[in-house]
Length: 200
Length: 392
Image (cartoon, rainbow over all chains, first blue to last red; front, side, top):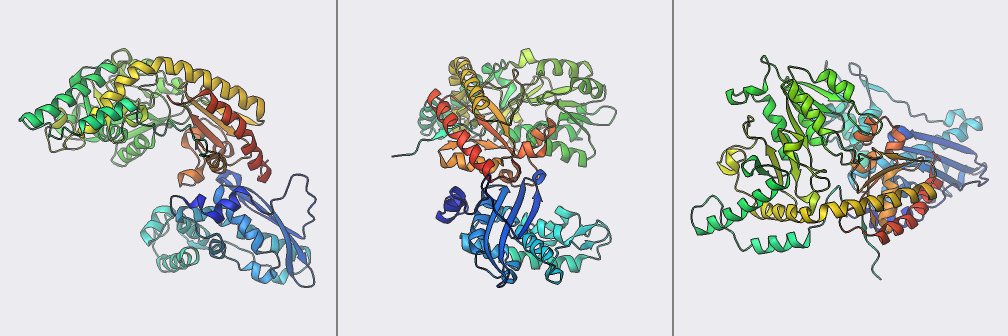
């Protein structure tokens, strides 16, 4: 599995024939759109959603990505999952839910596939913004955990996705807790949380 | 019907040459330890000596100037590690009690990581810049290679972009200021003529599996009279320079691989250059917004590195793989790190173009029909990836 992940039927199907990609020149009038990532880092994702105003349900979606095979496959799966889904439910979809649908990806590939649900949340927030539903918006703001080295919870999540599994490995990757060390307890808590969120 | 398989990743590794395989299968019968004095040992020692002779002659060295190692990485580590040794024997690498080394930003990770480790041990390390075609900045070279430098290490041909450096000029300049010179020639030996006497280098690394030999075997040339400090200690093998019972099968395979290179290298180089030009012209004709990486002339004949704007390299690689074409990419996603190729970034191209780079490396089995097949498939793949892209 680990070596042949790209050939599992489901991944291969979505990679070879991605669903709901926004085509060139396609006139897709979205009710919300979001963009995350950055080409410099090698991955970027745009998500466009149509929403049934009364039912607060996603009726259709389109996406585009500058990303690798697992980004393509996982976002394609995600785009099928969210059609007909309540906004509230879509808002709390996690990479793990997508992985479950996709079968599985090797650990080192999971970090490539977290952009889809982030872009989706950005699109939903954008829909709320456009419709003056500010109270529903859930912004993902990074919080600083390690004050000395200026390391955020987002960076800790990233380090976990990149393979950090122990406090020591977290320190190696982020330099967190290498000055005063007061953030250790909080960092270890977040470490366990993110490992659970993404990998268990 | 079996899908077409086109292997264009020969800079990563090469298939065993049938003659090498034959020699190795035959050698499997001879199991003796070359260190043993009896007939079993002597029989194998003789085969190892022949292989050493073959490898040495191929690069213009003497037999006792070549030792075998477990990999190109080990050979490179051996050279760099010597520099920081503070035993009396190795002190000749120090100048006024200090050690300083000069290398480049586009070396293989085994050299870069070793150099960084040396820096942590207190050695002064300078990483030279390269220009946009991957050539070492010679103005900077002249400025930093001054008396006090212990060793200069520059790779002869780059694995990713194929750029070939002017090793002869650099080793001359290094020697002028009293520095030793090492070149990692893993990608060069067997593809272009390499003669250690002509280049006048003190150390040179070559590897078996890049030249249709087996994996797990490499050779390190070290010039007679130059100080040497073993990396792996505890045995008299390899002239006392690399302990451990010899990988006899690997050594015999490498010897045969080199012998075959001697016969095939030059005509193959001409053929591959022709293929590369056709591939390059075809890509220019069929695909827009591209950039070729590496030096247009001073480049390995079989290596073509090209960036596709707005298309991510790992996706391209895997779509090509689905069509039976094997290539590699400088994209971060394929490397397991967040950064794209350090080589491409060093040439000054944007991270986006580095993420969208594909390396085609041809070899002795590459055919014209395969190149045509690539030119048929590639434009469709790039189009597909770009149509999904946020950046095109």
